[in-house]
Image 1 (tube, rainbow, N blue to C red):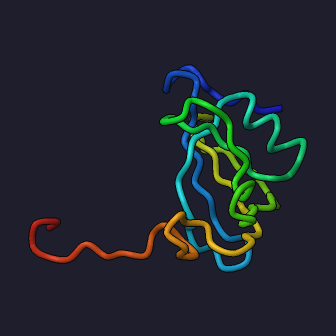
Image 2: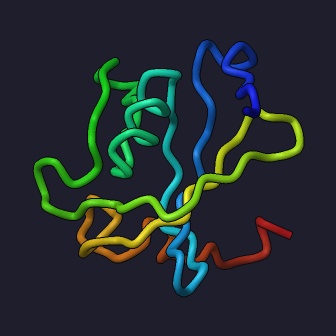
Length: 109
């Protein structure tokens, strides 16, 4: 089994969440060892909230669960990619993806 490197970022790893059917990026979140273990066991995306300093199951209050289909790890073992079937919206704004806005203008060039 691959060992995830939780040491680099204060016990957390970034998690990119992608729609398994369309490959659309839905959101970015963080996991600690416990949230990863629970996600693997339940097949429901469970994250660590840096602001609340607690675990949260995506969809627990909204009903917009993320059903994990696959978990991939990057070459440095410190970032995860979750491929999920998304129930409803992934974003707290009600949008399907958190990435729905474009940056426009010369300042990004």
